[in-house]
Image 1 (cartoon, one colour):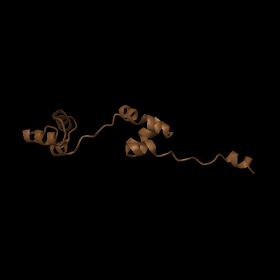
Image 2: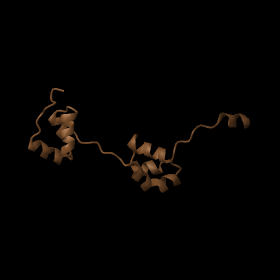
Image 3: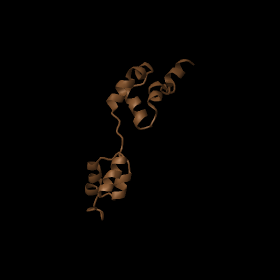
Image 4: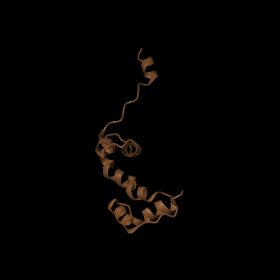
Length: 105
């Protein structure tokens, strides 16, 4: 936390803006979180996915392919799948129930 009172210059604000970092986020990173100014200016902000909008866009296709909302969102957000693949690639089939094998003998 040695950089707690770092000074943010006008050129820092300009560089941050070019990198898609709003001035308030830059200030928060430096003054509230103790980031180095250089890191605060250069490290891109995280892009958040609006899960509801994403699901609404692909809902009909995914449900038509037997993909639930939970599986679709997990594929896109955690596994980093492309949206069209997440909505169309079938789920893996589970193994047969052992009782079915016994009955058929």
